Length: 300
Image 1 (cartoon, one colour):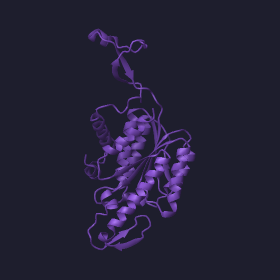
Image 2 (cartoon, rainbow, N blue to C red):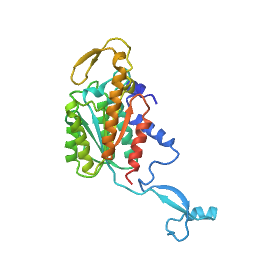
Image 3 (tube, one colour):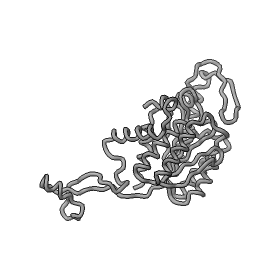
């Protein structure tokens, strides 16, 4: 799957993500949807003494053996997909950005939710909520959300800084019913917002929401600091602040600091039962879809 080619040439988000999801699900040995709907799932052997209401008599006539039909139980999942649209999400621009990756991944998740007839909605944010749709499961709502994602995908730059914690606190008050909250952000937070981010996640947790955090990043550039070893001007996409450094001189210290930050984030997320997934935009979408399905299956 070549995400860069899609973004620059095709831009049919609905068709592309539908194909990605169908291909991914086809490749799984076991259905990830066991327990999610009322559709037939599989057979199992009948155990003496249990109810006979789900016996497959047609199969019995062919095999002379008793098998029980297993169905996937219905559930009423509500999913809020929340996407960071601040300026830092629109880098790097050489191939495709963190923002573009998040949009395509969110559309893939919506395809799965549509397949299961679950309710979902979109929220875009920077340091405030920019746009928030209602939670619905209708075909017209899916079309509207895909169009919103498509329009966002075509944006060339973001505006404003990130304040994820403040936004999460607002959303915790707005989301009245227990939901699965899926958050895409690069967590490019100002130092003074760091504690607010943890409080925002904690707020959602205490409101009984399940949370799946996708920390979207470019491993090559933002973790490994894989730049030419010459003096380089680094510019903060959100503040405009800049500094000139030789990557070779700071790479080891920088990488250690990033890993320490990740460790701290994982510890906090574990404390509040939040699933944290590091989504490298250079990797395929399949790992992101898989992380969502694992969280989704935990709703049973």
